[in-house]
Length: 125
Image 1 (cartoon, rainbow, N blue to C red):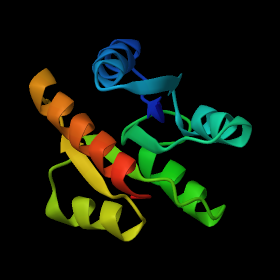
Image 2: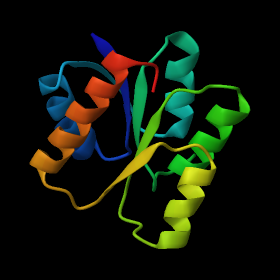
Image 3: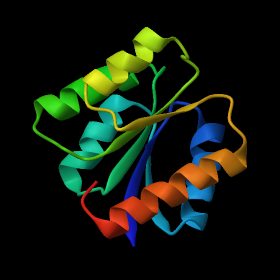
């Protein structure tokens, strides 16, 4: 089973995303911000990360920058309400493999997670 780290400061959002991810055959671990996510990554390996952008303490961009600075290549999908093209380009430039815009329909997230799971099964992203 593929390991997914879900990072979001909102309990409800983590719960919804985690439930859908489990339905897509992911084993899910949750973190409420970038700092907790880095702690989780220090303790175990994940196949992919689904992270919110706007979070307290360490936001998604800061988290990904630190993750990459530590040499981690784990694929990251960012969940964000930021539709600004420049911000999306920033995400890709810092090493994010994709993004999902909020608000999203559960079926859209399910399709994105199923596609991610298939890519992970075929190769190392």
